[in-house]
Amino acid sequence: MGDQLNASHSWYQHKNDSVLYVIAELQQETNYVKHHIQKIAAFFLSMQAFADALQSAGHHVLHLKLEDTAHYADLPDLLLQLCARFNIECFEHQRPDEYRLLSQIQNINFQTHKLDYKCVDTEHFILPFDDINHYFKQDKATRLEGFYRKMRQQHNIMMTGDQPLGGQWNFDADNRNKLKKTDLPNIPAPLVFENDVSNLKARLKKHNIEHFGEISDTLLWPITRKQSLELLDYFCEHGLPLFGKFQDAMTGMSDYSWSLYHSRLSFSMNAKIISPMQVINRAINEFESRPDEISLAQIEGFVRQIIGWREFVRGMYWANMPSYSGLNSLNATHDLPEYFWSGKTKMNCMQKSLSQSLDHAYAHHIQRLMVIGNFCLLAGIDPDQVDQWYLGVYIDAIEWVEMPNTRGMSQFADGGLIASKPYTASGAYVNRMSDYCSGCHYSVKEKTGESACPFNSLYWHFMNHHKERFSKNPRIGMVYRNLEKMDSQLKQQTMERAEWILENLGSL
Ligand SMILES: Cc1cc2nc3c(=O)[nH]c(=O)nc-3n(C[C@H](O)[C@H](O)[C@H](O)COP(=O)(O)OP(=O)(O)OC[C@H]3O[C@@H](n4cnc5c(N)ncnc54)[C@H](O)[C@@H]3O)c2cc1C
Ligand code: SF4
Image (cartoon, rainbow, N blue to C red; front, side, top):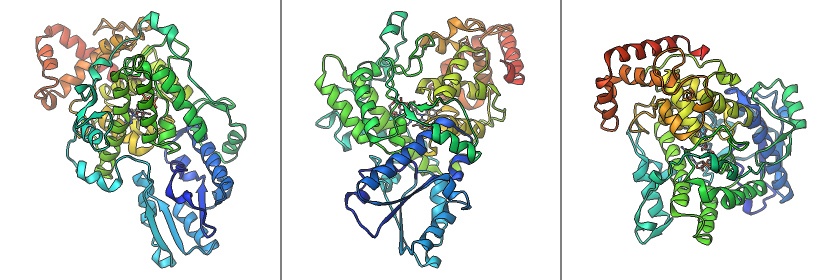
């Protein structure tokens, strides 16, 4: 599979002439949603590089391209026909991380084809698959913090005895700075690669592979372990010292607005080119060797994302699939507006975040959560459409990580299994964390009238609409007290403005 490019897997530690490794480009993998062209390119080029590396290490590899697999109906058809062609006695595979693919393989009746069958671990995640059910139960709300602490204790990561290094588990409160104008010249230029895609682009065209988004003749994302490790080194040197501090910050005023202090390692990790432990250990070494430049808050913020959030969402995914994929607890039904595919909207925060996603197949976490996701949540967009967009557009989007983040954390469609409250915010939040509002067609200070920021009225409308569900939630009780206190005429005009917006989402 394209997301199983783990050269350290025990499979590859010894050469065995009777083993044939198969790696295949399949139309079913390009077509299950419409994908950003950079995402397709990153996976296909990485698969090519991986197949070449295995071959050079002396393994037998069959790397099938789109042209070789076009006549197979799907993955099971391909596997069974290859087993017959090569007189295979035992079919062994690494456990897919997507429910869709696991079901496809598990539905093959290997016995009737006289094949031995074995499914092995991918040896990638920090939490072994079989331990997921110790931490996560179906339909049970689970919070990150408890899981994160246990993971740190169990793996002895930044611990002093059984206590967290520095006496505090979580430095999130220190990680909410805005970028000031004077900070902008110091933002590091992103390390980008120049992987040739001209041949691949021609092949995608030849096979009529649908895609969207921009790509030049080169792909800037890392496709090999060497490039991924270079990116990791570069991040540790240039990004880590201010990673936590500016983790939630957004700007539209730098050439490097799209990358800021983020690692951009998610593709390399999700394709398993490098492992989460490798990333964490490298970052901790950097922290230990530069104590004057990298504070505990920076490294803790980074480690929490990987040993915490990344492992956590995977646990929630597997504990709750397949029912999770159909959840829509807020009954959201609106269509995704057209500007998600063009970036053309007068809302500056959305324009910047969407255009960046279409240009680079990447947006950083707060853009995904508090701009684009927040908009979809407030606007009541159907979570199926939101999921499909996120799954298609981002370089790192694989369902096990995309869906709990999108449907769960961002859209609250799981009714709070992942998040204790909906991640909603008015324009004031965007204004606090970015410089987007100063260049916007809309006024962030206004709730009513044609020039009022759409996030403002939508926010109050959302809260009012879902009052019964959320007013008793202690984390947002304050919002309802403010809503009660709102001048009745202002409240009515705010609701009217929101209703107009909801009927005219495409025209914003
Ligand atoms: C609506 C929404 C959809 C998302 N979809 C995806 C997705 O499809 N694939 C994906 O990998 N991440 C997803 N994320 C999580 C996060 O936004 C990305 O992991 C991150 O932006 C990737 O960029 P980076 O490597 O520069 O991350 P950094 O900011 O440098 O963070 C370091 C690493 O931490 C991990 N991480 C951080 N936050 C999360 C999180 N919430 N869940 C899982 N891992 C996390 C990632 O592996 C990331 O590479 C989503 C978040 C939201 C709110
Ligand atoms: S004013 Fe509103 S729409 Fe415009 S950038 Fe700010 S938050 Fe976004």
